Image (spheres, helix red, strand yellow):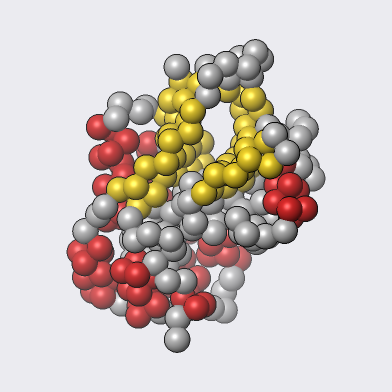
Length: 242
């Protein structure tokens, strides 16, 4: 059986990433795919980028990864770009939009937010048409309608079956907004097989030292510090904080 760890939305939180990385190693999973948003919000974007580059077989581009490369007006993005340096920013800008492969006779497509855009957000409670559109191929990539789509972006881990297809969200490693524990998934199946065979998707939650991460963020004086701290402590999205 092929086993692949799917991680997403680390957001510069090295404390959470290190906990997840140790858990992946403990389980003996040696293939890791990342669905983007390596940076943004958290205090250690450079360290996260370096780690992800070294251990992940596949990395696709998230909205924050793109924004730090192009936005020169908002401190949330410019601060991140300064920590990263030009070479890492260029690396983030060069990441592919999506990735697809076959496992156990199913076409699996991975995107950050949706096949339409890294900014096109789809929540598990959105209307059926919006969720079904997640299986469409990206405009310039992809080979057809996917059987299984995995994504990140919304920081809510979930799995849904829609018209015989499977949509799942990995949740977030470094900025979960459902439960304040790092989240990732493990796929299991037969690699590159055109015949449908047993397939498994496992959701994993990993506790980590949130207060240690808070101290790192405080020392780094990250922009929107209070909002970041509340997000990682309570799992409350900054747009919903009073």
